[in-house]
Amino acid sequence: EPECQATLIDASLLPCERPWESAHEWGDLSGFADESGASFAGWLTCIHGSAADQYSAWLFAFQELMPIVGAEVRTELIRRLAPGPREDLRAIAERARRQVNPGASRISSLVYDRFLKANRIPSGVANYGEVAGLLLGVQFGPNWTPKLNVTRLVR
Image 1 (cartoon, rainbow, N blue to C red):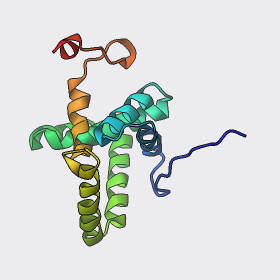
Image 2: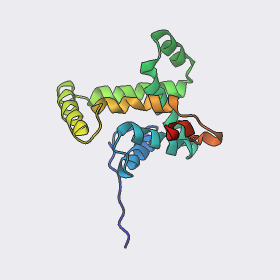
Image 3: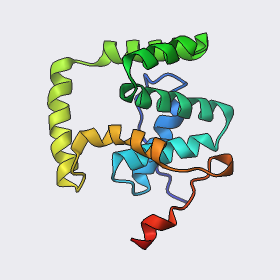
């Protein structure tokens, strides 16, 4: 009988978070030790999935890109969101606020940062945020297919 590997995800995740989170974890299992790479692979997988998968991917991307835009732009982008995505983002923030113990989170982050650095991820936990550079830096062709950058291969 074939062996089935599954990913573990937080049971309290909202339905809109589950597709991207599952795809990210499968990215980790597929060998993307770099968390930004696993996040990008999860995003790309969901972009090619169902409407619910795509929504999860874009909601993730929105959250990742918000910290790099100015406050005025961020306020305007949030204002332009439809009520559904705005409510989902609020619910995600509320879930995180309820679940996170600041002291435990700080210690956990320090330990995980050292773990990632020991496993050749020099930026440690900051690597998660580096997915914004991938989202903005990759050129896409039709149907969100990444284009090969030949100039990077030649160098």
